[in-house]
Image 1 (tube, rainbow, N blue to C red):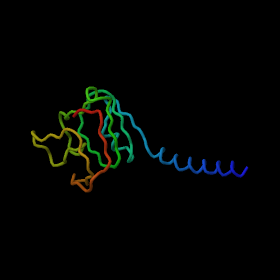
Image 2: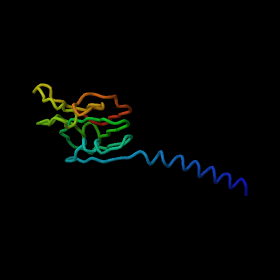
Image 3: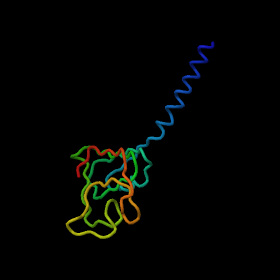
Image 4: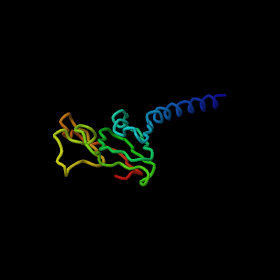
Length: 131
């Protein structure tokens, strides 16, 4: 009886340690026509953002740790330069853009309201995307 109680107690403690770690990770899905940047902005650290097939006209700013951007495949999921980038959206600096300097791709850092880098962001993963 004592062995069963000890085993049950250990199993309960092990489960309590595993559940919080698993529940802290999230997965968000983005489909063509939706905003990847919006998903990043609303994500908590350590979120996986799965991006469906399609072409996304965005410039992305990842400003929190542990974000994973995972596309369907390099041929099926593409992020391309926006036709008319808007200052402050994604990694477009608010001071305006020279025509030859339109950002394309993903910027990974934390910035203040003037788009000045404040700190580095760690553990960001980008897979199965073409830029």
